[in-house]
Image (cartoon, rainbow, N blue to C red; front, top):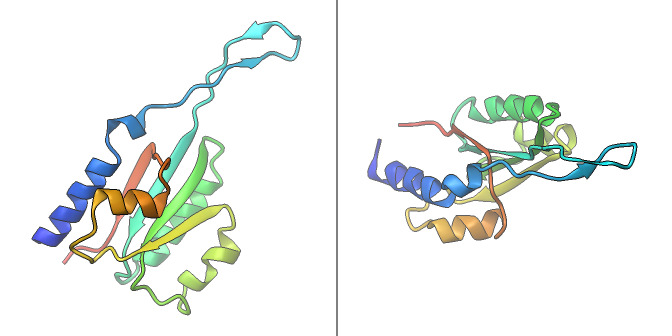
Length: 137
């Protein structure tokens, strides 16, 4: 693993620390009006990928499976902005994965920090599952 990839991996670990992996709970009432405690697990998934050969297709298929899973409430792809939007599968993301949020960033940029990634993903973004789908040299 090159120093750049190591720094990026460390940034992701910092960004999505243990607090991002704590299930969130909700309280609801039963249909009969009596108070009943129900735990609803809200599971957010993040797929990190670059433009490496075949990784776009793998991420696309993984996002499809995850978005069809009732236990996963949101799916985000953090995509390296070096990908060619006019090429498949990237051009099909919007039409074939309408419930998947695709966020682009310069993942090869050595100056990318945890704070910058958090700003790109959204200040309140937290993920229960993170898949590293980036090709390695």
